[in-house]
Amino acid sequence: MKILITGGGGFIGSSLALALGSTHDIIALDHGRWYSLLERRMPPCVSLVRGDVSDAALLDTLLPGVNIIVHLAGVVGESRCKNDPVKAVMSNVLGTHILLERARRHGIKLFLFGSSYWVYSFYDDRPMPLTESDELRTDSFYGALKASSEREIQDSALPYIIVRLANVYGYGTGVGSLWRALVGKFIRSAFEGKPLTLYGEGSQGLELVHIEDVVNALRALIESKTVRNEIVNIGSGGVHSIRDIAHTVQRLAVTHLGSAAIVLPVPAPPGKIWPDRWLSIEKIKQIVPSFPRVPFEDGVLEVLKKYQEFRPDSWNQLDRSEAGEFTAPKLSVKD
Image (cartoon, helix red, strand yellow):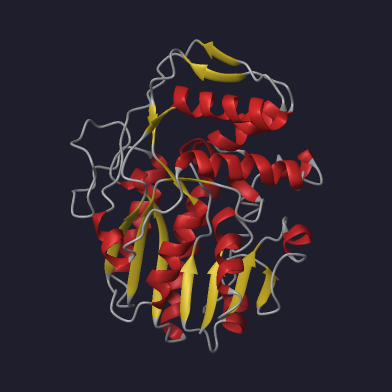
């Protein structure tokens, strides 16, 4: 099959492209800030294309012959969306709209969309675990953007699969949001001899799912002949406390780095809310019976060892935003 992955240069997208590249023809569309690293790791069947998902003319050159679109592009996370709300709306909502329009014109057979557990609600008190049939009570900006895109996809008449992702960790291809997420930050601090800081007692819970499990689930959905017009949660089915995550990194740092990392409690910012919530994974387990396969400590150790083996070329490069610059479409031109 020929597959277009938008956000194909990011953490999840590049990991998926690497996994699929040995059996499918892959076009990875991204702004390309990680391509200097990724082009050394990708198989020949993966084409790394620089561009924006809102570029209708570019999409028209890429989509002929494409069977499936995996849409992972967009500004990720509540804080980043709030920091630049215009960019967030243009990238997440308008970018999805333009991609859907082009997908219809080119007869795409499946549109797989990477959504988030934020669509259910982040602050509202709800029974756990969250199931795919639960009512959406979106109470965040990021969640609202994802929910808006979900609705348009469901109304598009294209065959679709919507995956609602928990927090993804692991090494993958070693690029993108890996180093901004909690596990990556803790490991980076351990290597740099800095304390692993947590708010208060660190009793807040976080659902983490390993990138290998995410990629295996996405591959199964992409290659399925029967799963269509479905919403599927991809998580781990439970939470780890921030304290336990920090102490896991601390223990592994001592064993494998000889570094005595310090766990440092700090006061939480005023108004900080971090409610425990997790996803039901019964549906994805019916599709991938072995899901999930990677134990949490094994996943953390993998990141630590990979970082030890492949230190990033430049922290300045990794510190830059993954989403890149959004290029607004020329709306005066009729498509």
